[in-house]
Length: 462
Image (cartoon, rainbow, N blue to C red; front, side, top):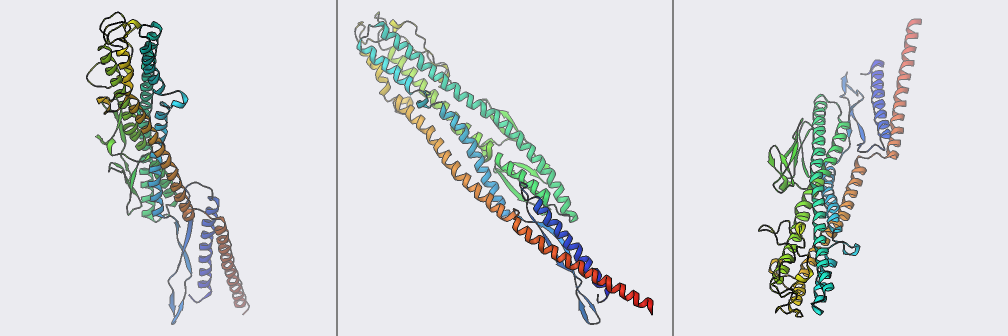
């Protein structure tokens, strides 16, 4: 409008807009070190012009809205990378515990007890009637059984720890999904009335990143600003303002499975700490327990069978050295392994019944190098060596994956910071720009005020 009141209105409008921009900039500077904060930018719009007497007059500008700056592609990439990082970290942590049970360099594991047992039988073959050598065989057998017992107990402890950690992770997941659903409602409400929900979106994004560290999720954004979250296998976690809690329950084997709305979803859960726990349990601890039981069962069976093929110091038929296995499967063999023989004279060193014969003692010692069908045609030491190597390989692979994934996460976090983070240099420049604009608008208001006062004075004098 081409009059003093119109000019004053334009300047006042600009003052308000620049004041709002200064407030946005100040807020960015104040939150420069706030975790998860996304910088905001003021969006100005030119007001529609008016036609007065064939002349077009501009109507100034307004602060239309304030936008939070985010890159959804980078955000989704970061969430997915955090899922992988969480799984790798928890898997590696548990696998390292398994590996420590078979650390031969630190005196753990079965290699030394196995060697000592078969060496004691080899030594006995040099003098089958020596009671001290026979006692050494019994002592070595007891040491071997104890080593199997300890290794089995260690694996059971790792398994128990995982089964305690799984419900804890599920509890954390349920807390986060509840908070995300609540924020969904607030964001949708703000979007509906045109209020800027940037702060709420930042809070929700942080919660989703935390959730991604716990379990793999798919993120689907709705038109009202809310998000729907499912596990990677499709189990619903959040839909609008509703959250859907996961639960846990024991399986017949004693392990904890995860359920969604009554359905077991454990096999489909990947990503995050929870995915790592399930991976270690199913691909690390359980196979290790099975292999350990298989080795123990085959040693017990082979030694006892060979014992029964020979004769003891008194010429009697040999009896079992180890307690025979109970049941038809190898499950629990390592934990149950024990020495049933207490009299060293009962060791069946002879193959023909004469006290000085060492044929069966040599046969017992040779079990160490025999190809056993129950071990897939491998020898005892070969099977154990492959078993330990397999665990070491898993740990090394997980370590390499961890190093690589940490770099990926760091790169994505840097990308996010470059897009959404606050640059103090940039904000300082903006501060000067908006301050100058504000001062100019204030100057216009002052000039128009002076002109108005002059016009009033002139009118009064006439």
